[in-house]
Image 1: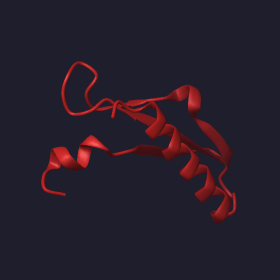
Image 2: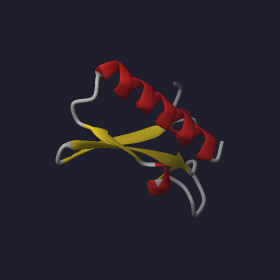
Image 3: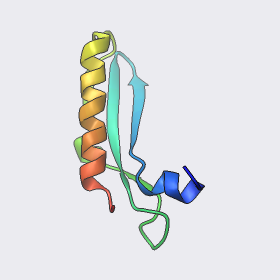
Length: 76
């Protein structure tokens, strides 16, 4: 990337949190780098909860889907 802005412009973000025996996988919306909606905003309605002992391949698939949701909800 030529600049921080170029990197941030099309970035997707997913958080993964351990909550007891569950993992919470939450996509975030990218509001861009300017304006009143800039930065990342969580999308709690799209959070997926799975057991913490989930198989790595299944967790990878859930993360990929969350990244796709992040992309679909973003402003770019």
